[in-house]
Length: 481
Image (tube, rainbow, N blue to C red; front, side):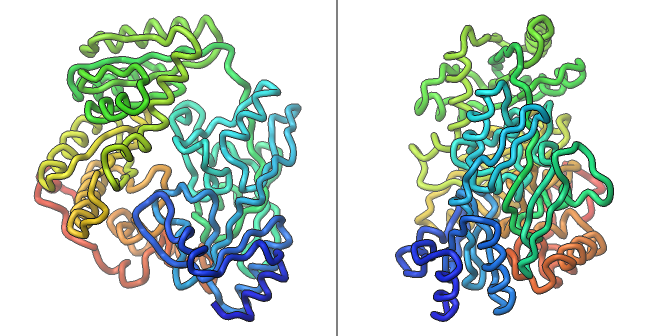
């Protein structure tokens, strides 16, 4: 990057808050996904005013800027394009206020998700959205991707827990959106900015809802001899009228992998398990636990175990939350998908993933938010083998195409980023994409912020990246090809 720009950046944020040497930049070439890109510089602002000055400098010089949190994203959203300035927000990590009277907290974007809940718990509250990476991921990144998590089934994802934002738009202007009130008049720009993947503005302060810690919690592990029975139980639980706080599913391969790494107490001879958590008033939770067990057994559940104490509960959740990390013991690389399907389509979709796994001769493990149909197939491959990498990409694409064919979405919480940008025309019409592009351009007309992310280029709006596979067409007749 131009030496003059580096000098000006150091003047804004300080000499120790700018990285530009190749060996330093290499650490910021990737996130938790599979894509890479080299930044021109990495800058660590410490307050809103510094962010504003950096954005003004970048805008005047037409230099792209990529906001970055903890780098735990899975869609390439924080990967540099065009030698961009990576705006690392990790030093803006203060919890500015805990307002229990209004059940709100005000935080900077670099606050770690779990740190917020741990701090709020001292006052009897917690922050509900809990991605599996919550020990590392930051609230700013959660806002950018509209992250979910196991415990968002009953209470909603990030957008349902954000009431206000302070943001810096590309020209450096500082804008306040929303506030502590539940609803404000005018356009809901707070909701619009959540999930915009850093393409509209840089978030520098966030007002979040705090949720009262539940009086009682029951954690159940339902064990099944077939994947179909576990999947059908998800549908049956929904039809029963019970909405658990969390409803997660792991297949046999994932069970064995996680148990070998964590020793969470998972049955390694099962075909699948459902991890079910209920929260609320003690009497209601007890009543629901009995009802959930009855539904699971009626759907051919082999056994339903209940955590006897908080230690057992935490161990069960440790297995689920560290499932992705457990794969590192047996595979050099894996490619994570993030499709969403109607719950009734879970059995058919898991069967199709198994077919794709055999077709490409790749191991695909399944661990996902079954309650809201948010799949996370994990495709294992050898990162040193370009052919395997290409096979994993193609397998992931086929999975996403099948997800769309049954009425689903290409992402539920990981974002579109650069990974799925070119799949957008399979889900949206050219007119849909044109409206989205116009809205983005109203805030980011020169595409300075996070360029070439989320929305495909104009040529992609006129093309379908590939015809749907024959198996998909046969499984879902009538889907446009």
